[in-house]
Amino acid sequence: MWFLSIFLVAVVTYFFVGGLEKEMSRIEIAPDEEIFRPILSGDLSDDPAKWQFDDAHAFFVEYRLERDRVRGQEVEMLNEMINNPQVGAEARNEAEKQLLNLVDLMEKELIIENMLKAQGYNDALLFARKGVATVMIHAEQLSEGDFIRITEMVSAISGVSREQVQIIQHK
Image (tube, rainbow, N blue to C red):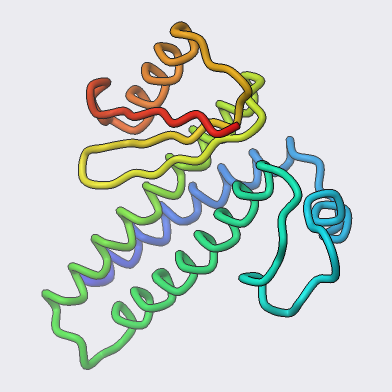
């Protein structure tokens, strides 16, 4: 049974990574210095918490960096539980389930955020929790049509009802 679970995690991870590679192939990769030069002011400290940002777009960059760091820790912890022979079968199954849910959430975030950027919005972040999806859009102005389009798209991809999709405009 555990072999089937690990195999299932491996298959889901393979398809997720394949989807990421496909999405990443469409994105132009710039060296880190070029990304941070226009949005950071002053000298860079070794502590990201002390960085001073020049524009609103920096919030989105900082949030993604922190989210990726935390997610990496979560994935590492879950993998350690799954691979630890001293962990009971029930706890291992729960860790596998949580890992699959996390991978699914990461895929939905990636798809929704990139689709919104592809539709012409400056940037977007998805915050999903217990049946509610909140989308923060970096845009000067959002029309009623924008709210409806965003709500429909987020609902369709995330599986959250339209009534549970919240949109926050960040200028």
